Image 1: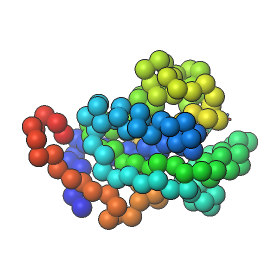
Image 2 (image 1 turned 90 degrees about the horizontal axis):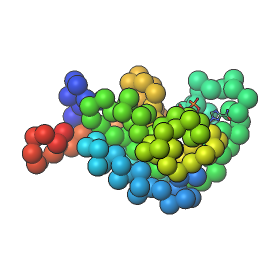
Image 3 (image 1 turned 90 degrees about the vertical axis):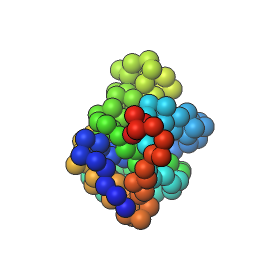
Length: 155
Ligand code: RTP
């Protein structure tokens, strides 16, 4: 597996159970593809509560932690790795604010949701947490740093 070139980043994006239930998988993938990001890993998985407790370890003291973990384990999630320029920061911008009521129209949350506890998607908040999350959700051989064979301006 080849690594991203230095100016590129990798981010972990997940479509949460509510996004899958509402049939938004294609819509969300479409937005990242259209932006020019490259899909380098993808799977649908129903995560265990133990797996999710590690994923959300930074939130373990929050009052909403148990309900968050229970909800995230309630059905299949679509786990993805997207690669490209500023993938972490731009991914967060494309998702919108944590509270959908504070999300701008044009963002995924701002277009499709109104409730923090059902905000459709997850995106890594920093390059180091992205690395940790990618390693938590994917084996190295499940991530493919494939190369575009078309015009060089598509990265
Ligand atoms: P995410 O990790 O899912 O991309 O969300 P985030 O960084 O924007 O927000 P974070 O603070 O890390 O919270 C993670 C998820 O927990 C749920 N949450 N519920 N007050 C609440 O009830 C509350 N606050 C957060 C949301 O599903 C949020 O995305």
